[in-house]
Length: 164
Image (cartoon, helix red, strand yellow):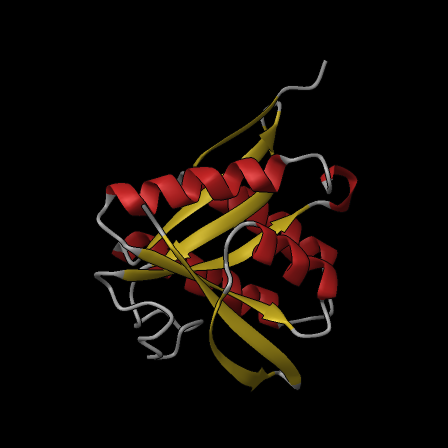
């Protein structure tokens, strides 16, 4: 029987899931750059990544970005300011495990972790064309509109959730 669980990521776990991410998109060089940025931010303590495991294999991920120094934030302190607001980034799971509640469990763990560190809110971005993801994020309580930007040719909407 398969066993799924969520936990904070180790560097080795991050390397394993990023190798899978790169293998799924071999013709997109951005994935190699994103892997390097992810590992650099992790090593510098600017992020807290989490993984979903199936048995001992990472199959999903999500990362809390704390610092506006993270390249995904690009200095936008409304998304992550290093003290009160953090950003949920790289939230994904392998297609075979979508819709089974693993990402919801991961989000609850990430939200609890951010709250335990004193963060009062989290932001999350979603491409406007991704109506299914937007509906999920709204359901999770990310209902306060923060801003929108065009990124890589797509309109991205950012929402905030207050943490208890």
